[in-house]
Length: 420
Ligand SMILES: Cc1ncc(COP(=O)(O)O)c(C=O)c1O
Image (cartoon, rainbow, N blue to C red; front, side):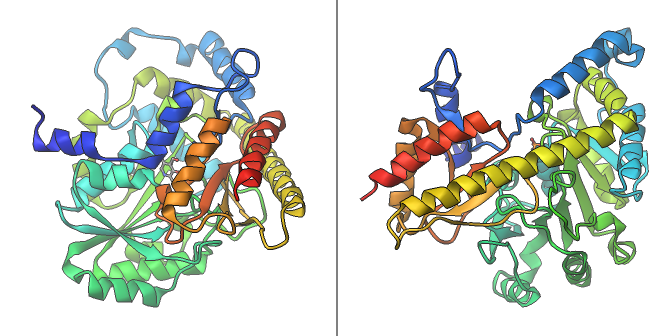
């Protein structure tokens, strides 16, 4: 009954989606469903949800720029209304992220997943390949492979800090048929390790891509979620960007840094006119509601509020990360001495990338523990979802209040203690 394409969609299995479905089927609520599933698997932050929602409510109620107007009911510029794209450029400038792009070089879409999919759809034909350092955010499988049938070539990295060498890129480029590799996608900061690549490394990647006429997509969706001292600089501020700008495409969005996954806002920035034009043609399918754009335009135009928000966001992330690391250390004290949890020490993001391989040796065992955790009432994303080359890894989201983390970690500890 379904087309070949439709069948591929229904047959595909995505562990991140499966885990999220488990959570949705039985969501934890402290009063109405205390034994329900706590979601430490989806990269969301609830640390400032009340602060953010009251700010948005107040904007909608009091700011004339955000009140519903007749033009909200009409078609508008699908690539983002000009006032919003202008407000975004001011945001990036006033927060010192970068001052590299003009409003017309941005295309606003319904999420960064859509931005990555659209970019790859205009850069690759079916069966072309994309290099990505692995373990990587598993949603890229959906964005890159599911509908446009490009394939991902994982670049092996050091699992605790995502580092890899330029010579490993050379080797993959040789073995996978240079003509088929069209792009390199890097996240900076990285999901799931929370690592930040230094400017010198991003500069080397830019040169590597430019020399081979390969596109470099840099996903900086966690750029304002850096909570420890770090050398981070946006790719767009690096001197080498000027010589590579035809090949560099920048991705950022509201899901993480403004903890607004549900609003579905992603931003593409590029100086490559051909790529921009192609993405803007696709914008009919990817555009977002003008009312949301006008509301967020008001929010980000208040530079003082933004400065205060980002400072709070980073401090809360730092504290939650420290809390979970302390809990994991305490858990280690209680385990037999040949069994220890190890984890990445993140500089950024919402997650710890945790090595549970002293308990779990195979992919099957990893899956079993994932199911066991869900039964016990906690969803944690398994390493398989990130294409971890070694079994026995989990990503733990820490961007939630301490009482929730505490309960979820009790459940995690119980499952580990029961493993033979
Ligand atoms: C690195 C990275 N890129 C893109 C996305 C997708 O974000 P969005 O909600 O904007 O589609 C995520 C979500 O977890 C992510 O971690």
